Image 1 (cartoon, rainbow, N blue to C red):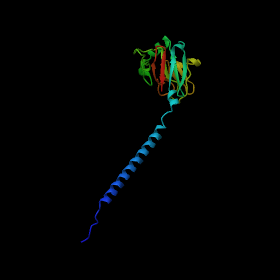
Image 2 (cartoon, rainbow, N blue to C red):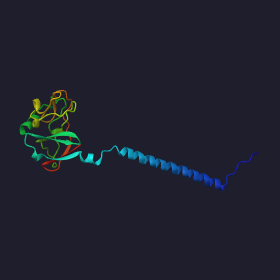
Image 3 (cartoon, rainbow, N blue to C red):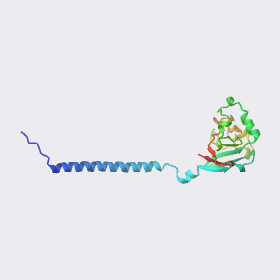
Image 4 (tube, rainbow, N blue to C red):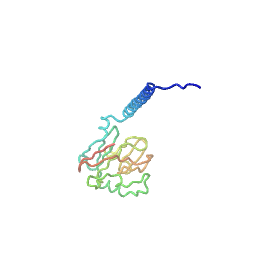
Length: 190
């Protein structure tokens, strides 16, 4: 018969202590790895100055009727156009079914604080949807074949609602997020 070694009370305490040390070390390592991972991912977020540059308040009362201003937000161009009654009527009269990227003029506008639309003010991206060029418009004296914007690089023509009507551009000029802060000021954000 063989004798089995007996465990005394001291060895049980050593086993418990060893298990505790292993668990505590593993938890500390996991916590350190999690903190490192969070810091590594968090550094991908935009800096505070970039976030601040991703929105802009524009006083639309200073834009002359039939004119536009161009603004940069986060390094990207945007057009803010004060359309005439004739430009609004031209945009409304288009048969949407004939458009490459069908959208009504009202679908391209944002509601004011009271929920009504202001058809006189149109805000669009200032980058052609073909290759990202910046189209010319009334501020440069060329509104293309449809009274809106014209991209001379490859010949894309946009109407007074920023919808593609002719040329290689596949989609309309995108409308950014913007809201009316007051009757005369809009906030455009990326």
